[in-house]
Every structure is written in structure tokens, then in C-alpha cells.
Length: 288
Image (cartoon, rainbow, N blue to C red; front, side):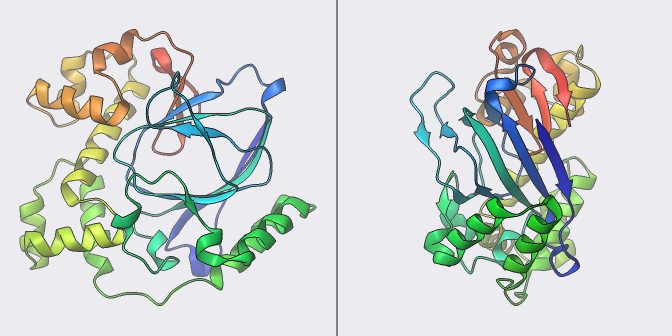
């Protein structure tokens, strides 16, 4: 099993957090569950698969799944998605910054909301297939990254107006774990609620309120990682919730089950939060 992180080239660094190269032979892997539950975290990712593809659905680990394509974008999610891996997974994941994907895709990101598989060949044509072949044939990881950087730099679009509204707002939300007055930010930016919401939906596909909720709930998972024995009352309070029923409702919408069931469930699923941290059932950290 191999996973490695790489930084993008300088021209791409404002829009892409990192590249992750993965090579896992599931027939030889026993320490990692092959069914994952991805918790939404407010960013989109792009995948190039040159090994076996996985299956996915929005219904749960025991529901029927459909086979993934080889080059695709996972749009902005506001509900969990389940993945099942078999064979040998060889892939590169591109983790975009919150509003970074739109610098490569000239579209309204709201169109891809809860879309688990946007076909990149439909966007970039045969060049996508050629890149997959080049990645599979690359003799080294560094050469794979060079080819990916070159491919994306050629598709970098001109910077669009108003994107800083979104970036600034998200920075402030993250700095406060999502517990910040959006109305106060609007006043500071000098724009109205409707304007800010329109910018968010266009640039990242979700509203400011939804982004704030994703940040707050993912902070709850961070608290679980830090203190697995934390009580649900303290967990909701640390996430900025003063109404437990509100916390329970948001937790279930994001994770797929209530906090009580989340703690007591004995399944073998692997929970993936923030797009990076792997959290097993029973809140045991496996890797990050």
C-alpha cells in the first residue's frame, strides 16, 4: 500500500491544495477497510484512475452500487457518499481549494451539486484519455506529477471577478470553526445576502450557510479525533451548537446517521473526513 502527497506547481498552487498518489492492492491489504464513507467537507476533487475502478452510491454500504468511470470530478457534496474498493486501486487525486475548481471548468458549480461523477472526457475530450495513458506509463511519481502539472496549467482559465468575496468569507469561517455571523461578513464586504449567496453557488456550488455547517460539523470530527471519549453534549457545544436537536439533525445529514448510532455502530466502514483524515468506526484513527 502506498499513498504520497505532492504539491502542485507554482502557477496552480492558489487553486490546488495537493495531489495524492495512491496504489493499494486490496487483495493484500487487511489493515484498511475497503468500504469508505466520505463525509462532505466543502471542496471538490478530481480523480484519474489507471488501476481498477471503485463502486459508489448515496444510499449506504449494503445498497447496490454503480461502477465509477476513470477520469471524473466529484462535485460539491452536502450528503455522504459510500465507496467500495476491489482489485488494485492506482490513481491520482487532485484536491482543489474551496473555489479552485472553477479556474479549470468554465461552469456554474451549482450544476454539479451532489454529482459524484462528472465525466472529464465530456469536458476535455480525448486529451483526458491521453493523460490517463501517460500517467499509467510514467516510470516515476515525479514524472506523473510533471505531466499532471503541464496538463492543468494549459487549462487554467483567466481569473474571474468577485471570487475573493468567496475566498475571504471561507477563510473567516475556517478561522472560527464556522461559528461566525454571515450577516456581519456581508456588512464588512459591502454586499447583500443575495449577492454573496450567488457568488458562493456559482464558485463552489453550495451556499454560505451550508459551508458554515460543513466546517462546524467537520470540526466535530476533529474533536472526536482529539478526544474519542468526548460526550455528545460537549461535542455539540464545541462545534458551536447550543441546541442539541439542531446538532443531531445536522450531524445526521452530513454523516448519514445520528450521533448515537455513529458511536454504537459496529460496521467495518472507514469514515473519511476533510478529504484526508481516515476515521474508523468506534472513532479510532488509522492514518492521516
